[in-house]
Length: 399
Ligand code: PLP
Image (cartoon, rainbow, N blue to C red):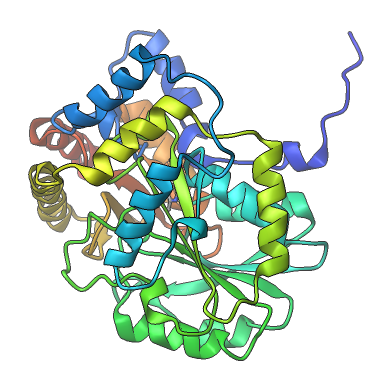
């Protein structure tokens, strides 16, 4: 046998539950089974949620005009300007210079973690949370500590838990609003309470992941940066969820630093951005059209998502063995498995896949501590597909 070259520990430790479960699903598909995939938060994988045509036209127009060169490292000036006005419209003074365009929120996270974290530092992130908040900080010698979301109170933020877990080594405190995977939307009072805690720790910056902010169904969502007059906030957003173009890989970070505490770390971020050249030029033109042209189309998309979400909640309520807190936003359901035969959520999910060909993601993939005993599903498929999926899930549990 050939001796294998060693893999780094940091790479070998990476897990991404949402795509890891696809491996056995693909095997089953190869055997000819039709799998209903409810695992991935990609609206384009489902019917009736296309990227708006005016955005596609702008992207194509850039390609046709040979606008295919490298762009400025921090983003096209017109796009930075449009993002700054969008963020300002959410209630805080954002200037073009506060905005950095990246290859999705995911690249923004990698850059932020690289600039903020050192050996021995911590990221405080919600439990459960979107997996990269756990996977990436360890690459920089840091650890992610989860603060609890209340599973029986709509997954609201457990402020006492944050209070207990805060210390001077916490460099980044993460709010995901609306949350993936739970769909919780924080109230203004909760956001303010988080700032009250963070204010006592001058090394702490808030990451505000607002990638689902256009899919708020509560009507009470606030921009997190708009609530701060002192604590630094980095707002993250992009084209993936609310502009229905995740494959374009365009996102941004917008820095709100009212007291000017982040000059050094910002210099580090700018160095990192320059060293990775730039984000895709034509895709930035597509996003620019999304921000500057009429956004009336979003109402139709939002209504479709809400209708599908409501249908899922209705079905879950009728299935013995499942419970779910009603999500306030985004397009996920984080479902509690009360089916007593379930030993582990991962095994339950694999059994469902193998026996009834429905693919969801085990909750422990979003937090071993706070997500265990749950699964996450997307509500994005058309209602007839969801109906079949729930028939199969019901059959699996109660059949
Ligand atoms: N942040 C959250 C909370 C997400 O759920 C996702 C994708 O599912 C992302 C970020 C990824 O964003 P992007 O596609 O811009 O990298």
